[in-house]
Image (cartoon, rainbow, N blue to C red; front, side, top):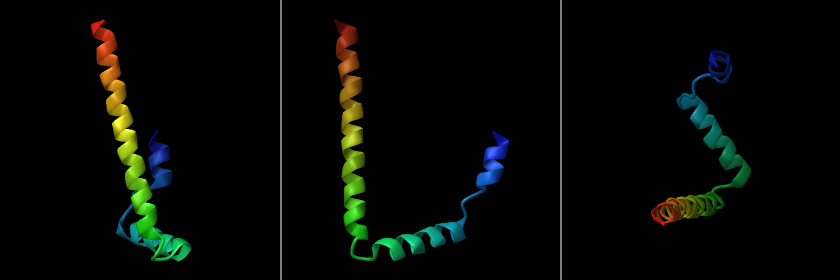
Length: 63
């Protein structure tokens, strides 16, 4: 497991800046807000589905 951490390294501020620059070059400034909106709605749907799943389990356990 330690070898995995050594090979991946620590993500620092320079790596984050590099990733942001690459994303901007690939998608452009106008496309980023649309991508983030899609990501946010996907996360919201995932959270709602996981809440529904735990609620369904509680109802099934009570029967």
